[in-house]
Structure formats: structure tokens, C-alpha cells
Image (tube, rainbow, N blue to C red):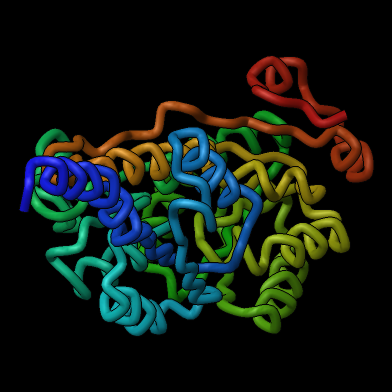
Length: 324
């Protein structure tokens, strides 16, 4: 081979090698494991990914798996994502999904959203140094029971009996019942616990609340309630004219009276930020668990008027948003 041929060969290699390498690059796949049904806050996840340079169906693929609030399906759905060798798993929005992802893999990076302390759940070694293949967001939704009851009491000072709607299949139910019972005792009201885990049981639960003559209602944090059952719960509260306070703003946007709790959309945004960092090479072990810092107190004034309620100025002053 003469000098001219060698230069031509090297030139061809220099041009063609990067193109070949780019052609072999694999698009990352995010396994999105959700305990409930599709809901409005979820859109914050792909939107935030796109802001970080990962556009769905362009340079990243998202495999969505919704358990439709059938929590016993989560292990199977998590195992399917592992079998598909996804790049990262996002498990939300409750402890059940995070536990299913943890049981399915200790290798694939996992970003979770949980309502309890993830260290106590055994998901991480500590909040500041997760130490394993998982990290994520701890959003304080279960700990706000007393705050919600306090708001109800300020709105309805004569209330003597408050209903509490819980899902018997939710992992957080036992703790919620303990908290709501204790909080009710502190403000001098009785609490009526009623249970439902599907649409039919919601009808029965509200009939029970009516027969028990509750003055108000607090709805426990639960994925089924907040996604698939949300519109039905709001509709039943309206039908029976029961003032209710909910855990997240989406209820109020559907016509519910009030909500107080963490911003779920903000939590999904944080999940996307951590997912982006992991796709760029960060290790979950080095990413501290984020704790919710943004909380929403939303009031729906048309619903209040329909219930014949006047919201006290002290309550209105606390609201982060008032729907007119």
C-alpha cells in the first residue's frame, strides 16, 4: 500500500467510525411502574424529562405499567420491566410500587415516590446516603391528618362527628386510622371509619356515612382514591352534601371542597430530574432522598356555596389557591 492509499484509508475510517458508533447507540428505556391509573400530575414527568433533553419517543422510550389500584399486580409488572432490561425504573406513587420494584431488582437504578420514611421501609440505607440502587422522593401525605382535621374544625366549629374514608388494601391504612383517631380525640370529635377498595364499595361507604350522620369527611391518602376513584368520591360527597377535605388538589379541580397536601406534580417533576441525572450517569446511591417542600391548600368556592358554607377569612388566608 502506497502513501496515497494509506491516507485515503485513514480518512475513510475517521469519517465512518463515528457514524457507525452512533448507529449502534441504544435509546434508553424508562420503566414507569404506577400503582394506580393515569392521572393529571403524571404529565409533569415526561415534560420535565424533555426539559432535560430526553424527549419521549425521540431519544428516550417510556414503558408505562399501571396496576389500576390492584396492588397485587405490582410484583408481576415490576418483573416484566426487569425482564425487558429497562435502563431505569420509576416506581410511584406509593410504598407498594416501591416495594415491588425493590423485590424485582437490586441492580437496575430505581427512582421511587413514597409517603413513608424510605429508610424505615428498607428502601435506602439513609436519606442522605441511599447506598443502593434506589433513591427518590418522600412526600409527606400521611403525616398531615391532624392538619386536615384542624381545617375542617375551623370551617365547621359545631362538627361533632367526622367520617374517615380508607382503603383496606392500602399499606398506609393502619397508620392513618391510628393518626386520625388520635387527632380527632385531641379536638373533641368522634371519627367514623368507613372502608372501600372499589367503585361498588364507595357507594356503600357513603351510604354508611350518611346513616351515621357525619358532619364532615376526610379522605385517606390512597392511590385508588386519588386516581381511578377520584371523580366518584367527589360526586358522592356532592350528592350527599358532605363537606370533605382531600389529600391532593386534583380532587378540588374535579369539584371537591378542599385539599391540603404535597404537590404531586412537583414530586413527579423531581422524579424526572433524578431520572435525567441517572440517564446521564449518576448513581442512585449518591443521590439523597428528596423530601417534599411544596404543599397545596386549595379551596373550591363554588362547591362551598353549593354546600351552603361560608369559608372563614382565617381559612381563606391560608389557601395557596382559591378556585372561584
